[in-house]
Length: 478
Image 1 (cartoon, rainbow, N blue to C red):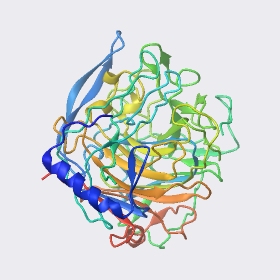
Image 2 (tube, rainbow, N blue to C red):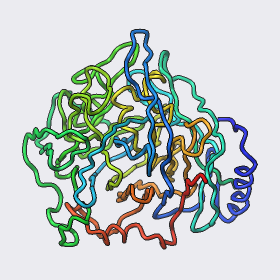
Image 3 (spheres, rainbow, N blue to C red):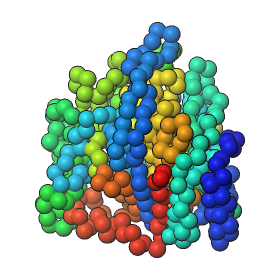
């Protein structure tokens, strides 16, 4: 992408950081990488703004929308989120936690979409492009703070297929210087449970439809405490145990088992088969398997949308709530093995990211007017490879915060996590609605199975501010 005009203050900050970057930053495929870190802290996240919320699908292949206003800490990422994975990746564990008895009820829901994408019309996949310099951050190593506020480059991309808009503003880095196919209805000898008491991410009461009850992971708290001040697990997946509690695996393969397809809007969201890449007619437990390059699946709450509690969504889809709430924690364990053979879109470029949950429920990859993503409803890339074969995982928050147009703002870090090509990475992403902070951090090596509860001190120990291998991204705009 091309540079857009930057304000003098932002340009000065970029130049200052470029000088400091001489101590070890490097350019790879047009993106800047500085230090391998254990933690990245996003601070002052959230602002007052608006985006276009989709209200209808039209016969001419476009969508209608209305302005939706939001404000507060983390906004708009305090709305319901879906969690997305792109291969090559093998997910081993995933868990969602809420603090102090909160179950994630949220008065609003939202979906967002990945940035820098070109989409194949059938599969709903996207192409990554070089990230443009934006604004950032202060580092423990570099101690330079850049605050957002300058107008960002408009997104540019070419559609990968006729009739499909590939839209993702590629932004980040300002420092210079497997597929097994399974039939749609096939199931493993697995345990799949949906518990309304376990994880209500919606404002409505959830229904419980469990095929079998499962107790996942360790039933005891790591601290031995069940205090309401701790973190309680509300959704859990364990690949080795073939268990999925209070969550569902989905993908963008609608039309052959669940969901829908049409020429105007392409594939909708659908239940994922146990291989993660096929379409199923009902929720399936993801096998302990790797998905390949440019394959994607996503995780939603098991709570189904009822009435209008999810807002508008595409007709005919299996509509589920995302994970709402101002304060919540996600734990991940995954590997991202190299996949050197093959070519094409997103070859050997794994990623994990959050989207405003409205986006997959309308159209994640399709006409621009049919998603709130382009107008800034929020995306958070937490572990992302930006070019084929890279072993560095970047992070970036996409929203309208700090921009003049309400869309192309946010920020990110040029520090990175090491890609887990052999073993696994265990990490937490902690959203703190009280202070507007989001922390991405590795968790302790002694964490094995994700426990049903964690006390406050344990989680704080994972995210120690004084960690010498930490990066800080400050999005404060005044």
